[in-house]
Length: 157
Image 1 (cartoon, rainbow, N blue to C red):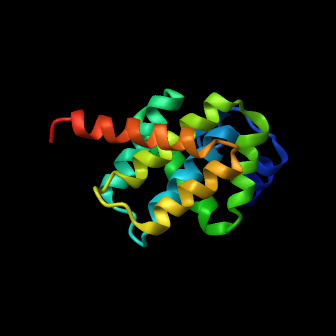
Image 2: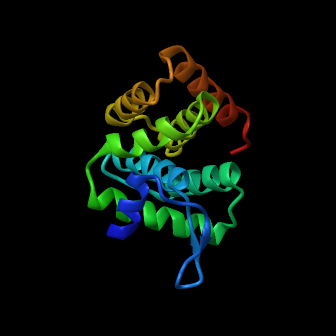
Image 3: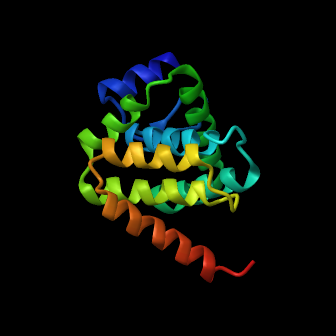
């Protein structure tokens, strides 16, 4: 795992087959998943609703199968546990990807925050901090949040 983190921060990556036959995710996928996991952990409880929201976001955004999304979440959980450097994950995203991808990640973060139906102050604060580090404006982050809320209201329960 240390080698994956080192590769993540050095910008080495690319999706390929790993030694165990599983998919090795690129640095954008891992950094995105790590930020989503971090958001889920902010309230002290990483529940099934949040895990499902992360999996759905990763599958939709990166075209992953359920198994590969689950493996990416596990890899992201390890990365988050091994480092408390939020800046490293956001830097990977900011330095390599354009405004549309960064905004989409903020929207994914809001979907994780709202997954359990409750917004904890720490979760909202994290999204604001990440948005700032990604150079996503408060206005754009607010619009992303509104899109997430609109989807939640439109979805049947």
